[in-house]
Length: 229
Image (cartoon, rainbow, N blue to C red; front, side, top):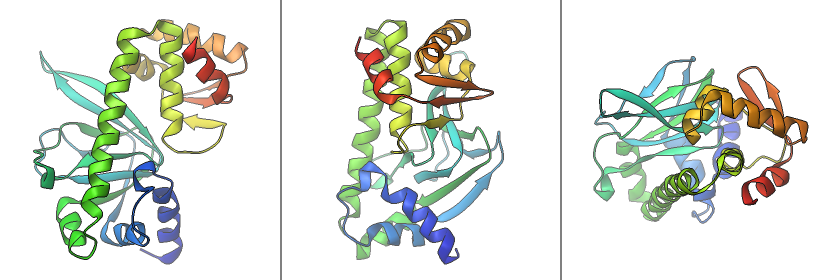
């Protein structure tokens, strides 16, 4: 990895909330230990049930996460934009991959395998505390999404999910999401028609701008107020 590219990857990684309390130098060591992978739209990073584990950081683009439901149905359960991190480590009693990760748009990923994490931990014993923090953050996001789906009416539910997706990158508004209305509806348990109507309302209020297969979040504070209404 050339230095300019390593610096760019490091910049994305450093904005990840789960690394906020990491030891100085750990982020650089993780970049060095990882490998960069470019995926075209529709390509898999890994599949549910794959035995090889580790963590995955979205450096560019976006990936969507699917899991198998009864009846051999593939259900969309997550959408991860630039700066987002997913993964697991067998050190904590984990098993095979629990989701399938597929690129939505041309994407670049930093993949740090479980074996690489184990090697890193010899020099960085605090690594496992950081990985445990990542696991907790992922669980918190999943529980919050479930609570929003169960408890919130349609408009605040959609607004809350948009705010959550924007928070992944840590970038200020406007934040562009590479997600279509059908996928967004699947994430929040609403039909595409309902999502379209709500987004049209948000657009009229100056909260979002609608683009083909993308969504620009213009006013995050306004969306948060809509989520809390």
